[in-house]
Image (cartoon, rainbow, N blue to C red; front, side, top):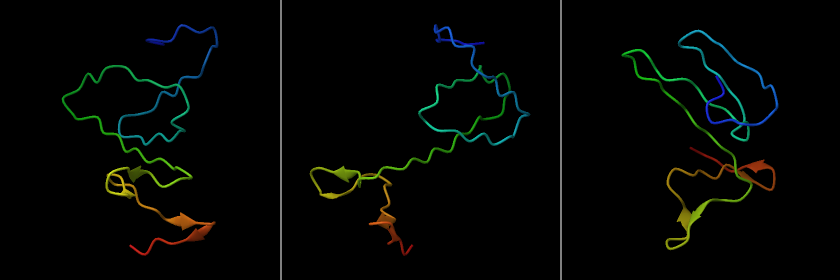
Length: 78
């Protein structure tokens, strides 16, 4: 079911068993149907930004942003 999508492209359905990990770009239009179980549906979101995402007031990385590359070299030591 393409809830909220009104385009003409057919699209692809990824029907997977409960507990399956599905990985895709955040640029991909996606959605899921309602969770009809008593179990919590979990999501793990990780994104990459070529620029450090900084808190403009504090001039430090914002929230949980962790710089790990600089000029193509790993700078993360955690």
